Image (cartoon, rainbow, N blue to C red; front, top):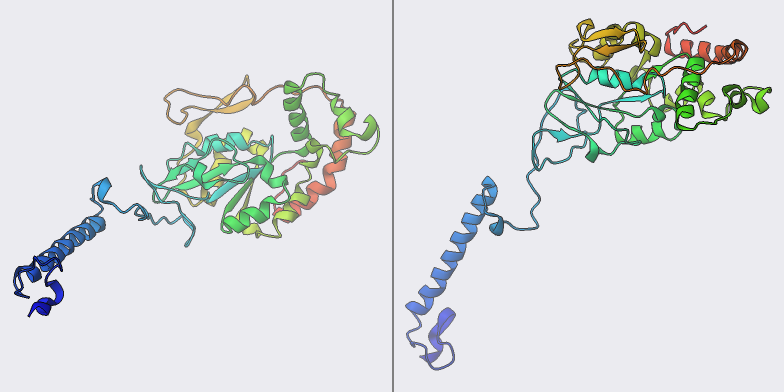
Length: 332
């Protein structure tokens, strides 16, 4: 019965055994068993994550490593970690401003805390891939002073991370503007005088189009932020007290971030030459360290009449800011 070969009968070339049973059936079964064994071994090694590189399916995504942190917003997006420990996360806290208010000092002081990981550069609308890795219980921080005065920043930050804690370092807007001018002058010699830039045509009304003046309108900038974040998300740090009492202000920041007060007065000393507090022991070093040469640079002489005009100009804005924050900074 030549047609009885069934599943594994003759090959059609006249060389079949003609039995319809035996080896032609056993050979496919053996092959299937071998395939099943190989697939089973592959699935087991893939599950355990110990497959040799050549055996791994290229389309499979790498395993995702999760760390649950009290400081992490539930459901916050994380990046998988391919190597090293920890995750790259959107920052849970941002120092959003203001320029020449003391933001760099505050960041450097906070980096002494073992539970704070901070990006040293200013990414300007943070990129999560730039963030340092953080472990369970650590906080990712970032500082970009321009955020506070950038109109679209609150919306963009809220859309990426609505539970972000926001730190604003503010300083008397008049001295802040002069410091801002001093920084620009150091990079651009031959700049017009401070008075020529602060007032239209040097004699007219205050020129709020000049960024050095506009940044100091804190109440206006805060109104923009309050469209997206409630006041409970903010901590306002005094730039003046950051100089006179760095441990006290940094203590407030640690409380705000839910951190133990690790950075205390034992970490600071006052450098009379720079007129600024310095660190007795900087991060990763056993030697004292002050901030860079650009910090604490001398200000150009500005006529008292100019200072007084600006103080009068800022006064109503300052008072509104005090009311909004329930905090009197003592600039008037």
